[in-house]
Image (cartoon, one colour):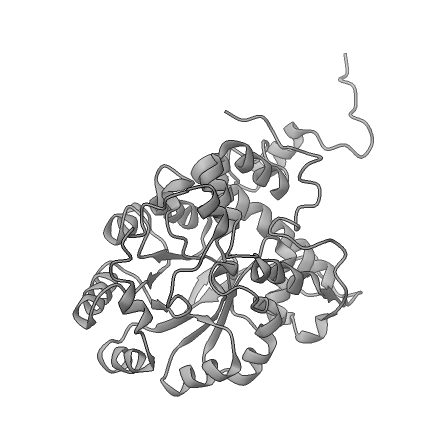
Length: 389
């Protein structure tokens, strides 16, 4: 007997899985068909403390909301009747080819979201083919994370010691195959993250007595100058939010200007990253690479950033949501879905690669949804995702 045909317009999980298998995708392909399902599954699995740490920000969470508002205030200007039968979503990361212009942004305490913490993130990044930036306050540490997977990787440092202490981190990073070194420059003080405080969520990677924080508070352009005089690993400054600081960074020979507000976790009432990105790109004018993070959750978000001149987009919360949903396969599936969204978005804009994007492909528009950390997933409560163990 011939099997009954599915209703018109339906797309059974089995067919989705077969389609993904033909593309060499992960075993979770048929389980997660949308990023919203991954987010919903992560929300269901995570305890309140780690969940609120992941989605929360500082004080009123205004900066975090403005990250999404800035992205939601960008609309596309598509061009048509171009041959987009083949779309290339690849990019380069400090000269190395990668599958997407996307990097796993540094997140402290990834052990709250995955058993293998940063090592699992490295495995997922390596399997998919994008870079990882490792945070210095993330287990299992620099050497163990580097040994976990063959990835393109950069290292991010919170300064908790003197010059010799910093130099030791640089030498270890270089010895373990990290291709660039990053200093976070927007964290002179640890902010008041009220979701964590109200929930009494104690982060094990943060010293209770604040030991070592005085070194981060004392960080200055003199430290940048000293680094450039002593070390040859390309230097990234993460936390640049103004043209003024971007220009000073350029005068010190910094290779990467990383536009970031820590996902809204540091200074409250700041501007969204995507809002300040265009003016910083214009000021840098090709003299350094410009990277960005802050609220990037969808493939269309990535395309917007590249159209505005960024070279690499960091994803932090989204990567952790993938890990929390289903471990390494969940992270890989998250990246697969992100890639599919990117591919479709590029094609519908009328370009066949990121090289074809220009600022003329985007324009300003009023946001449609009320902005929040997860407002990129408006159907989140309607479709809770598959019931996974």
